[in-house]
Length: 555
Ligand code: C2E
Ligand code: MG
Ligand code: MG
Image (cartoon, rainbow, N blue to C red; front, side, top):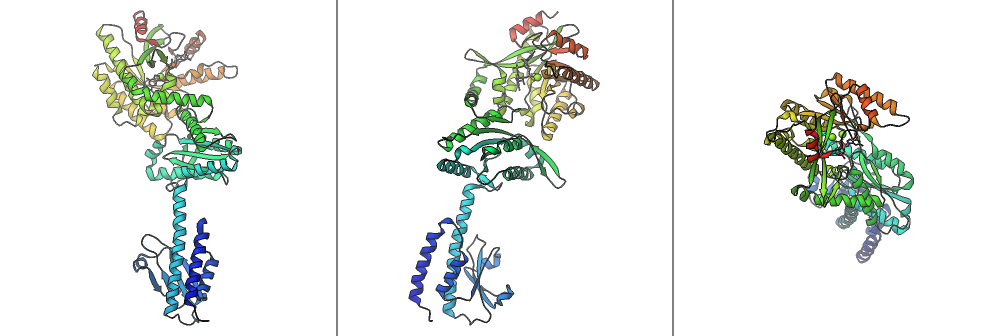
């Protein structure tokens, strides 16, 4: 049958129309589409091959190229040509003629070319739509979902009436900057990718972990999976490098038990975000579940953050001094400077604002403000001929990344010309290798300048014996938890206390026990051979004037 040009064009038009209408689901050309096309073009003995990785040379030859190659032996092809894509794309199409088929004439060539061009347009369109779809709902770097996917999933669950079957969570990886510093950016990204991939593997269809940006993620998951997700986020060991080394990744997470009548995705976001912020605001907390108190605490956090700069300027932060008492002479032989915030006549305790400022790094400013004010006080005591004791100042571990930290501490002390033996810096334990090596630098640096150093809150968190054996600390401040009295653990606590003290002393480190509240505690300390106590049994943290009076009576 002769090929009818008019019918062909009409049929082609119909074909394109159908393709456009049917391709809204982004699927590529199907084998049936190709068959249909062959019939249309009256080129039934044609084989189409789609391939990737078009070589640069092939690409540069332009739109349509005739290629001859061995390729598929079954077809015994001896002639073929391709439609090559324009710059920047990598898919190409080759048409192969059967060996025994009659040669293609010029018209056949023309038809086949337009055929391949059409395939090219459709496949490219479909491919681009897939790429656009991927980019819209995925995070390219980690190859995971993004915020748009989270919004889409929550929205469709709301529309389908299934939202009440889900819980949502927002988490932030703790101290990921340490992993970055330790492994370098590329390896650290690999670790993050694995961490997220393993979490995704725990999830089923319809659930998803989505990257919000940086080290922040959300998870939408069925209520039954809560424990699984929660446990994973508390701590997971992730392998890196070839030697099977692992790094422990921990996250702070805020959870929301989504109700059936949840109106929109904004409510889910607000709740998980508030819960996550509260979880992040305390380094020792991992998971927080949304409730009204969380919302209140989150509002408080935002309030404190916004008030900080002005409060520093107006000197609203006050230094309170809590005496450290020697149990040999019952005299004050040191003091710890503790921060209080006097705002609009209200005295805000540090437990409320320190975690907030640790999170946004304002703590670094506050710590130096405190050191500055302590030095100013000591200078005035020295100038007025008063007795002076060594004062310890808390330095949050958030300061550890600062390259000139030791120099800045010394410069502040020297600004007031304070003899270095009057200053002690209290630092808490660290959680990662990088923070540990930073800590090492600081402790050695301060030691060399004659400023003493103390480990604060020893015994809670991730205490390791390396901490006391590898660094030249002057003082170990043992946490008050060892003095807690309970039916099961009192004897055990006291025993631990005794051994920690003896171990520290064998390293030449002086011990101070915090939270001494009773005469019984004093007895326990003495029996454990520890003669420095800090606690309410002797004194509460005192405002400057009261502390001055206390020192004046220190006979
Ligand atoms: P810390 O450094 O371990 O300070 C000791 C805390 O124990 C103080 O709480 C003190 O008031 C409390 N304490 C003392 N004796 C007793 C006792 O006998 N029983 C009980 N239950 N508690 C006692 P405070 O002043 O509320 O400070 C809490 C924490 O806030 C401090 O713990 C410290 O980690 C942080 N902090 C306070 N001021 C600063 C500061 O200027 N900079 C930094 N980075 N952190 C600070
Ligand atoms: Mg302290
Ligand atoms: Mg302490």
